Image (tube, rainbow, N blue to C red; front, side, top):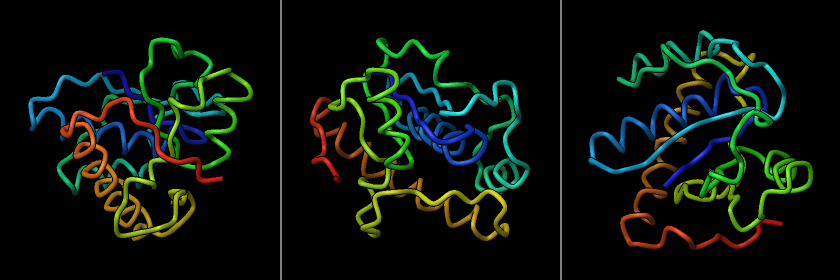
Length: 160
């Protein structure tokens, strides 16, 4: 299964999600191909310092990652897109023609928080990056639980 995380610049949330899912998949011996990209073209930009530090403190490496523009992805080859915000989902569908059934909001997988969007920690204190990391990690647990139940193709209800 090929999964892509989408956010604005691909320097905070989506790279953290990318790294977290790669780590969890490796630990659980899951065959997942993970990528991430931004709806704005910041190609080649390294992860934000606080994202890098937060991941490092949580045993998750993003040291070899750099930003990628969504327009450079093989969109047809991706099975599931997990977007951080409604506007990211909308850009995938309206601008790039991605089937809306393949796009969900990552926040929908968090059973502890009903907010569907994952807030951008950029320009926030370090604590906001840790909160974002922890929320994304909870979302990954929910996502992987769905996959382990064999429900890889199910779409979540449209959050409106």
